[in-house]
Image 1 (tube, one colour):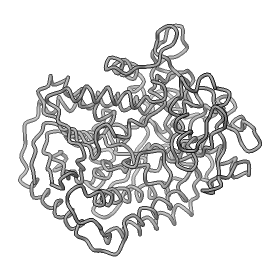
Image 2 (cartoon, one colour):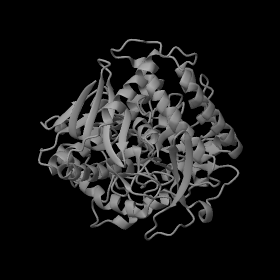
Image 3 (cartoon, rainbow, N blue to C red):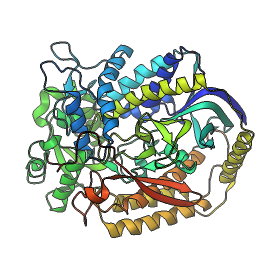
Image 4 (cartoon, helix red, strand yellow):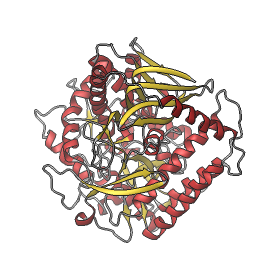
Amino acid sequence: MELLDFDIVILGTGIAGMTAAIHATEASKGRLRIALVSKLHAMRSHSVCAEGGISGVLYTENSDDSFQLHAYDTIKGSDYLADQDAVELLVRNAPHEIRFFEHLGVPWDRNDKARISQRPFGGMSIPRTAFAADKTGFFMMRALYDTVTGYENVQLFNECMATSLFTEKGRFLGIFSIDLGTGKSILFKAKACIIATGGFARVFSVTTTSYATTGDGIALAYRAGLPLKDMEFIQFHPTTLIPSGILITEAARGEGGYLLNSQGKRFMEAYAKSKMELAPRDIISRAIISEIDAGRGFKHDKSGLDYVELDLRHLKGRIDEKLPMIRDICTKMLNLDPVNEPIPVRPAAHFTMGGIHTSIDGKIMAGPSSSETEGLWAIGECGSVSVHGANRLGSNSLSQCAVWGRIAGRDAAKYALDAKSKGSDGLMDRAIGEEERIGRLLGNRGSEDPYELMHEMQNTLERSFYVYRRMGEMARAAKKLAAIRARYKDVYVTDKKHIYNTNLRDVIEIGNMLDLAVAVAECASRRKETRGAHAVVEYPEREDKSWLKHTIIQMHGEKQVVSYIPVNITKWQPQKRVY
């Protein structure tokens, strides 16, 4: 086993992780040694798939926009489950981050006055989403990667998979990982760690997300005994391509696209008359499924999936300029040109509002309401701060990654500069124990096919925790998922080699997803209300008296313990959510 000593280790190389590396470097003037660890090549992180843009109040003069309005839109969009102090922090810092990325070289689209263009997104009162065509994430990632690779103090570890997080008495110690290229074990010892590994939407069978979005960092924290928050809230993006689930960006509706049912009617008028296709995602997803359930959908011949249509034909002059990738995707995947034909779409799992429970500055909490874990942060989609509550507004995710990337990067740098290296006699022993566990997993000759377990898990979640949920189904599914997770102990790894063993990597990821799937089911099956992305048939209304609170789930040994903490409300009292 190789022992590597760094000041800061950052797990994940998406927008949040690489932004944190830059700000930690700048804050320390390059004096800190930083490890950037990714199970992929850094530029393959899921952030490159972000299409629509990043939100922020850029121009208040000659505009009705303001920080207060952005905050209100976000809080209302969250169905009042967002922590309002965190939302205010987000909206006040987002404009600075958009300009920061401009300085890094992101080619923002501009209007005829040479200002950064901003397009409308769902749930937003004012167009405030800055964009670079429909490839915003790629351009932001390219700028970050070019910057990070120019730093001498930052070392990239591509294709290096973390499998265990070590803490002791409320303090971070290190990360155990496997170099996938060689199969060798690496123990990263550091003063500080920032987890930025993204979400876990791959627990569903149809999702917009990359194959790598398996919630690894969240699962590491969970197994280390750290609390997770609001795991029941999973966003279903309303417009994904049939049957693949590939994302058709909200920008397509922001540019003026229509949703049509089988009768050729723009049905959103019946669900969100003032916003139509630019209502929040939870409302549009429910509207689509309601239309399908009422018999006003279409059926895909090969997959049997029901869908509605997204019509861009009236936008012929704008598609090549504003939505070139969408045209390319439709042409390649379905041999369909959106200039001439409507696009078949339906909701699919997209974003996980829940994640590791953190304080407002991204520090990982040790318990529901107790102290912070020393030297440990979680940012981006894997950290629940919480700015999205029960439903995220489109384009707020990239703002979150950028804002808390800066906050955590600077805070971790200050902490690492001030902290003295502390030894732990038990760290190497714990790492050896993890190495032995991985060895046993590799050598296991059990009877369970891990891929079959994964498909059972995904199909169970797809059936019982989709757009509309039912209490009885959720309770039965929770038991089934717990049983599937128990069977994981008897999985077998077919490939016994050490060098680039993708089979072993898959099995580790499946274990992570099973842990999180059980947590989702446990939290969702308890919440008896409809709020944001958690829509329960038996409880169709939001119930603030009983359920205006965050769900916390934590592992105590083999037992899952669920508790609740209040939502932080500063200015905006919950109101009926009408669009």
